[in-house]
Image: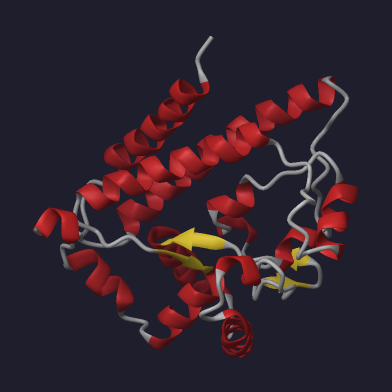
Length: 232
């Protein structure tokens, strides 16, 4: 049986391997998005297998469409996820939807910008992509949303009702949280090794950034970046 450390390393390697196999060049965003689709397919397959096991153990995943208690907290994503989502909304949203989305992202960012993480967690403010109780970008939602799966809707409501209470936690499945986290880190690790600038920001921070600089992807694709440790 693998230790937790060995399991985490396995998922990291899975993410790295998917990226190295699929992201063959940076001439366009297409290879990147292809790699991300493969990564999301892998975590989806893992989730389906895990869901079958939890059902057999009489503690099934409680998440379902229309349950949105988790959609009011800060959600972080990485650069490649932001690029995929931005490309998606440009294709799927009309002009009025984009205008509304931009307003919602700016409003939420204004409310949370520069706050310490602890204070951000106390603020209940809907995700800009939440629409009529459902996710409007479900097919391209970030990894953090894909692995945030609960065994108890009541525990999520309790956390929602007591957002500032650090003693209250939703009953999340730790295995899936770790699997997705380390798989994403492996994918990001490969992109960093290829000189891509990788950031981790909240959804609203990234969306405001991309709305203000729609050509951001060109810089991301062409400009090699190595952090301070590599340039010293």
